[in-house]
Amino acid sequence: MNGTTGRILSLDVFRGLTMALMVLVNSQGTRSIYPILDHATWNGCTLADLVFPAFLFIVGVTTVISLKRQVIADSAVPLEIYKNILKRSVLLFLFGLFLNAFPFHFDFASVRVYGILQRIAICYFICSLIYLHTSVKTQIILFWGILIGYWYFITQIHLPGFSGDQLSITNNWVGYVDKMIFSPVHLYRNFDPEGLLSTLPALATTLSGLIVGSFLLTEISKKRQCALMIISGCIFLLLAWVWSYSFPINKNLWTSTFVLWTSGVSLIVFALCFYIVDVCGYSKWAVPFKIFGMNALFIFIFHVLLLKVQSIFNLPISDGTFDNARVAISDYLFGNFSQENAGLLYALVFLFLNFLVAAFLYRRKIFFKI
Image (cartoon, rainbow, N blue to C red; front, side, top):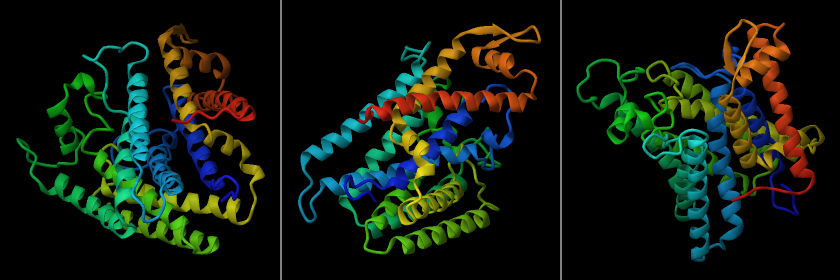
């Protein structure tokens, strides 16, 4: 931890690593993508599937660090803190709605309501209140209670009007609840991976970060903290693997095994960053990721807007057909490569462009926060 700013430098690095991977995954320039960089169709977990839960894990950790600086022990929580929590949550949710609406859906009759920033807003809001009013022991009980309760509900409670596999892509409680609330036009391709019911286990993902955040502020030595986080992460991976034989790892449903698997990966990767950067002091290699991590919200919004602007234009490609600007640019610049490599090369160039923007802001000490 930086003694002058109170920042855990490795957390910025981990956030930046996650940010870079997200931009890389989202900006593949062709329709053919290396499977590891594409989301699992249904069951399973790829590298791409680790990104969103890593962000929620980070939200949990940063919530503790931020609120700990603002709240005096054994004192009543100032009203201003609640106002700030509400303000940030609302703004995040509205930013998410704006990104869903841009550029063609500025109509409440058709705009998608759920989304990544919307889920982050909800999880941040609830976990902030949980942190302010519960002990770490209660948070651990809530974490496991959510995982077990969610498993029981979506596997053991009978889905109305259906008999069979309740974890299939066509019949599941997550989709059923969303369709009770919204018409399909408000959902992502008739099923929403950021739906209402699956936000509950996503809350558990954020709670895992919340618990780690409190753990980092204890008097335990940094080396021992690293060791315990890696051991805990390995235990999570083992539990997820064993449980997955009856309850598959599934991002779309955000199953309890998905929470354990991705939280385990986040714990291990963050612990390694923490050890290398904060314990050993090797930080020069991580400067690019720190730059990304300190303007994560801006880069998230910026890269989505850039990608959406490219989707507006249909341009000719070498086979005589037309496709969006992203595919056309990939075809023009990297058409001599395989489709997978062309898409990856485009994504790397796009990632570098986003890094240049982040570096420009960093050098001028401009950091977008809400």
